[in-house]
Length: 403
Image (tube, rainbow, N blue to C red; front, side):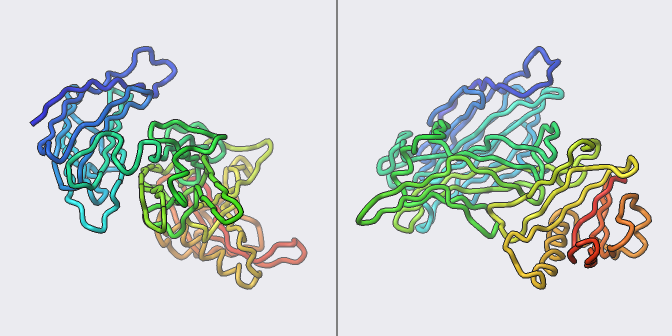
């Protein structure tokens, strides 16, 4: 069984006052089934990566971190990651990887990337493990598999995130604006030129597990008169709940998925979704329309945290982005608030008597219908009654205050 030692030199984000970098992670790996799994390559960029490949016939391998005794969970509190054809399990300082045998309906070429981390005091160090499955009859291939050249492959990365109210935050949260990019397989991004890999597909489509909609990133339109390529190399979206979002970019040709890569991003709640009490906009408060490209059922107008008598509050108001008639939009606003809260906190409780807990409610024209709370925040679904004098349209929205 092949046995090698890797030294992963990582650059990690650190506090401004830090002088010494965190200790790099030192790895060894053992491929238990060398006939079906092989090491491809490693890179030592800002985010170093290590790549393995399996031929779809099943297999196992173990990676061991030699200088950190305990590795962090992969996502949340989970030490297990399962993408269907590969399972990673963290046990102490080891990452145990099992590759399941393929089935006749599986995509011929699939790629996954998982980030593994450990703590060095208050700092974190990272290793990126990439693994591909290439289904053929002759075992693992070279990095450029026959039938699909290297220039046909692509990957998806998170470029940046903009926190709600543009606060400083080390981690992305729900309601932040997350920006993604499509790059070539080496991570090279082309904002102007049409990338070479687009020519191999009729379309490239972005989707995510448990999300109802998709977003077309690239499309080739061919007719007798012309041929056109349309591509969005960078796009942005909000997400309305915390947790890990596993999304996919799939390259289609003749209606069949020819290549697929996946990406995982974990969104962490602040005080409430993306809200963090402490930042108050007293100068020029604005509102932001939050949308999700993969769930276009609802949009929300998010109001900056402002203060009334030194008491902060915010509002989330459903947006009529589908231009529904007023009679149809009213029940939609209530459902939009309920869906947002059910996905983040729960169904809540009756709001009778809860108004006294809030300091910044409107003095008239609203009825409290539903109440929620967590450790730091109280939320109230308000029914805005119609008022011709105040030009107020009937609707439902969410009023939010700190405890």
